[in-house]
Length: 236
Image (cartoon, rainbow, N blue to C red):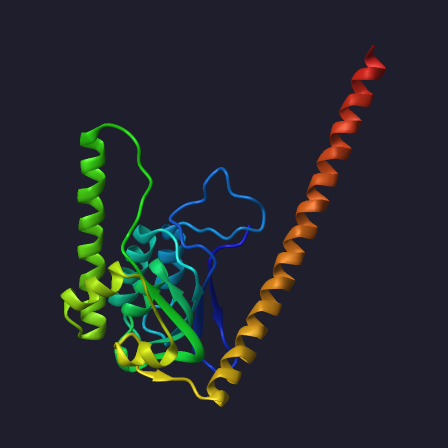
């Protein structure tokens, strides 16, 4: 099962951090093979290994757990080293990592989109428990608004209204609203796509090797189990 993030060193210099898939804080027991999850501790450890070096964050995610998004925001915001951001899709919690990058370094694809909305949760229980959930959601929105305000320069009142009406921004409106500084030109988008394809191919090769190794180990264990069974059958 792959993580929703992937760090890679690029041939042209610098590093890439790809944020794809649902953003969560842990691997839940109900996850299916092929779903992408990761722990924030793993993210922090890999990010710290690149301290002081140039990093480009590429976001193409539908979002996920706002707590994980806040944790990544804090880690990226406080890192040492030049940080850039290339946005394809940044929805919901996936908007928080881009807010950690200086506005001058945030670029969006010509076909990129950004979506912001009020935080949500599912809850059941007593009136007191429901009240706690309401207070929690309001506190989370306040935290997210602080990040948006710092990243865009827009007032929290205006941003709050955008979240409540669930606003989807095109590349042009993302720049207009301060979530991105510029729209990538075709050459920049093509270069980014080429570099990312190289990363995907390398990761796919590594994953294939891991799968082959796992299959070989499983076959070895099965062979050993069969030998044990034959041994005990011989004793009878």
